[in-house]
Every structure is written in C-alpha cells, then in structure tokens.
Image (cartoon, rainbow, N blue to C red; front, side, top):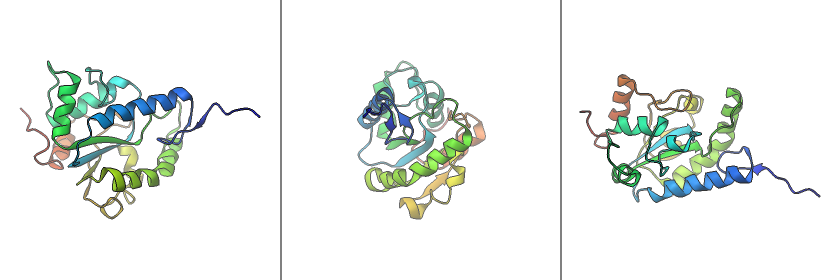
Length: 195
C-alpha cells in the first residue's frame, strides 16, 4: 500500500506536501511569538499571503505588501526599527492579524474554489476565534469574506464585529484614504493618528 504524499492541511484544507505543512507551522510559530495576552482586536483576512515578506509576523523586516500597508494604516513606523520592535508595537496595542485560511491559496485556484475552501474551513476558524483567541472585537478585512458576513457576526463570535473590507482581492491591504479612515474608526485608540 502506497503512503500518501499529500494530506489535507489543518490550516486551510488544501492537499498539502510536507513543505506546505512545515511552512504553515513556521508561520504559526512566528505569529504566536507576538500574540498579546489580551486581544483588543482581531484583524481577520481571508488567506495568508504567498511571500514571507508580506506576512506580518515574518522576521523579514521588509514589511511589504499586506504587512506594510497594514502597519502604515495603523501609523506604525518601520523606519530604522527591527522586525521585533515593529511587532512589539503591534502587540502592545493588543492587535492580532489572523487569516481564516492560514496558508496561501495555491496559484491557479479559481475564485469559486477559494470561496468553497473558506466555506469548508469557516466553522473551524470561528471555533478557534471564540475558544482560543477570545478578542474584544473583530475587524473583517478581506472582501473575499463578504459572502460570509452572516456567519461572521457578533452572535457567532461573541464580540462586536466590524466589516471594514480593507483589502484588495489579491489579499493586499489597500491604502485608499477613505478605507484607512473607516479602518481606523473601528480601532479607536489602537491606531495612531495620521501625521
């Protein structure tokens, strides 16, 4: 009997190689290091970015794409700071960035397939938010999560939920001034005022 080389990933549901699983575990390790004890706000995106430099908790101090735009919207400067200093500032504000699908969606995945993956993984993610993370509020950032607004509710998560949709369809957070203002309004006292 042949041993399967790909098994379903617990973090996203995709059939995954050993490398995929190792990468997921590495990202979890990075994120856990900067998880605050009391989570003031959980920032929820649809799926993790492909590039490590776009992943907020990566030790890569480049903070490009999703990570860089989110930090800019929060008014967290990265200039002259190590990744530990930047992430420490993020952590002190009681913020956590989580991805409903903890892994990047495989290249070439059709949008309908990605929606199906989110739908299948949603109950597990909601349980993790309620039982483990226990945030005081949730900000839903990704437009890919629009079809799931009824499930991403205060009654389902046990805390107030704000649907800011502060991201582009590619998973990168937008930098449009009006979207930044809506995002900051949902995070009073957690996002620094713009300079």
